[in-house]
Every structure is written in C-alpha cells, then in structure tokens.
Length: 209
Image 1: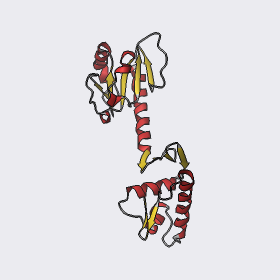
Image 2 (image 1 turned 180 degrees about the vertical axis):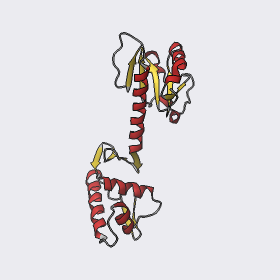
Image 3 (image 1 turned 90 degrees about the vertical axis):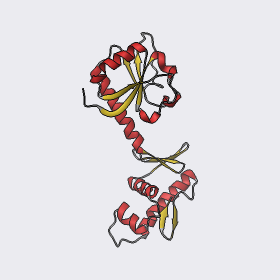
Image 4 (image 1 turned 30 degrees about the vertical axis):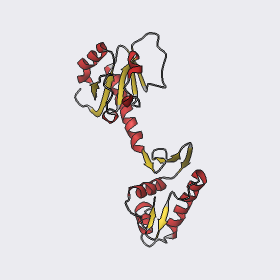
C-alpha cells in the first residue's frame, strides 16, 4: 500500500517485532519510524503516535510520553491498560484493521488538536464550543467563537463596523448597538464564570483581547 496518510508513527518494540514491522511497513497506510529508546531527545512534534509492546511501556523517552499509544499486546495474561493505550492489538496482526484504526486515531487527534485554541490563560474548544480556564467552563455560541478567534488573530482592534458585517454578518447600516448588545452578553457570561472583567477590551478604535 503506497497511499500513505501524512503522519509519522514512532515504533518502540522489541528487536524481533521491530524487524517484523520493518519488513511489512510497505503495507501500512501511514509512515513509520523505528526509534532508539536510548536516544532521549526525540522531538515530539515529529510523531503523531507511538507503537509500543508490553515490555517497552516503561522505556518511552520523556519527549514522547504524551503521544497517543498504540499497544501491541504480546502476552497472554495482560490486563487492559486503557489509561495508557488508545488502541490495543493482539498478535497476530490484521494489517487491514491495523491500518484502519491507526489512521482513524491520527485523524481524530488531528481534528481535536486543531479544535483547541489558546487565548491568554484560556483554552477555546471550537468543536465543543467551550471556553475553559482551570476547572471552569463556559458554553458559547458559534458566532462568539468566530468573534473571539477574529480578535485573537487581529494585530489591532476590530471596529464595530467590521464585527457587525464580517463576523455577525449583518447588512451595512444596521445599528451598531446590536453588536454592543452581543458583546455585552458575552462579557457578562465571562465575568460571571471566570470573574474576569478585562477578557475583552474596547477603546475608540474597537475591540481587542
């Protein structure tokens, strides 16, 4: 299979299984790199997940510990470790299932990663429409998400006219207090949940974060 998905999976298994994976990797629907557990400075950003077997669970380099784990269970009496592994495969491998589940895992993680945006000390989850700080969360609307993302991406304040026409998609000439009402409600919710009066700022030029 040569139509590889554009992700790179690290592989950290015993020598025999590494050799097996190397021999069959041309059938994988993703890229795979066998890594040396003794090399501590692997860059997390180079990999999207890691394949490990039971014996290597405690030998993952620190820089790769946070990666989603794909476990190859090569022991008969082994307890499920859902807290550590996203996917668990038993030997012998079914290559079709192996490909399908790993690609789906990577696509799901990519989608989730792209859905999370850092704004100041907050995390905005576009997928779940939630603004979060610490253990406090606030449900917001899709338009409020567009508004906050536009403020974050802008190097200068956004005018009421721009917000009115480009974000809330009102027709030119609509009363500007319409936008002020929307923003007032959002600021009020943020103040009530997070006790933050200055999350959204405004001056004569418009609104900013």
